[in-house]
View 1 (cartoon, helix red, strand yellow):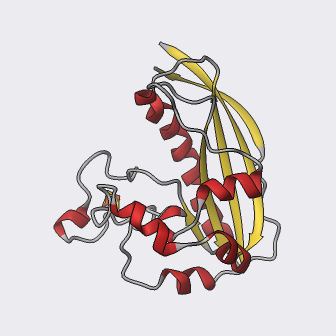
View 2: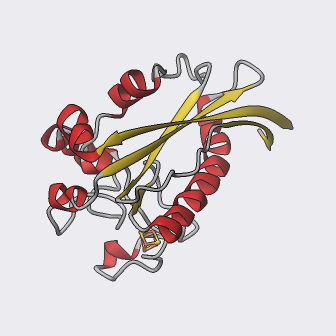
Length: 198
Ligand code: SF4
């Protein structure tokens, strides 16, 4: 059955130095990553074979995007969450890659299973290189950022969890773009109504 949801996109700008000093705790968050089956099994996930702090510090500015997904109807089961999240991940990741092309810099996608091998096992499991390195980007969590605090302190949005198998009032995807451009990065602030089969 077609059911609707509304997305609202919010953006925040912060210097990379400040974002790292206030919101990054790599040692703490990598422990959460280690509990996920994607750890070491997806090229978008830790462990990384380079110094992530050094990688981040090559950029001066962080442009962060919070995508709030609000189901129009209440009572949607949690196991339907990907039906709402996936189209928004696809849309936001496309926008982030466009920002890379336009401004240089590096995108950080929403955490979750990689979108680009369409459900096939990641090549990393067989020690083979990524099949889509031009598209795959790690999440901010994978680089040690605290997403709950990012949302509450930079966006004024509380991260909600589902209860009794039902989705919360809204979901939020947090992604980002690290760059050195002094040009104004395009704002993604908008509101759209969408529908999906649930
Ligand atoms: S594109 Fe394929 S090979 Fe690359 S990280 Fe995703 S699943 Fe793995």
